Image (tube, rainbow, N blue to C red; front, side, top):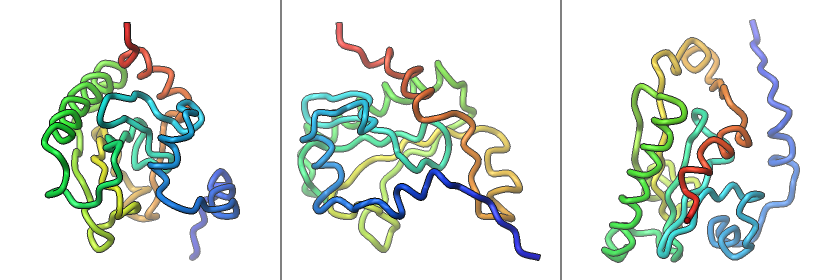
Length: 161
């Protein structure tokens, strides 16, 4: 028996024009933070929502410089990315009380990196049961909150005075 799950919101991504160049570099240059789901800009890196998340609140910490190799990442950038990770986890924990987090990088196309040339750190909040039957039988993820709702809830944690 065939099983179908409809996700019409992905049609725009599938049919829409694909940007030439690095998506992270393009969004950083555009200065359209809300439209690009950039939650926070710091001196050397920024926090952005994953537009196609594994769970609600799936964030990425991205260096401002186009660097694909972890060993070439300047120490100051790595330190700032880790500091932003702490802030992101704290904000997610405060707003959505996840039961855990997956934090990590996919380095290189073979490791699953969707943007292999520009490394980024994933912050994925997890809840008990978020890997329920939908993920195991249908290879489908259920996203409980809209990107806009999560953006609104987290934005206040990153405002500068």
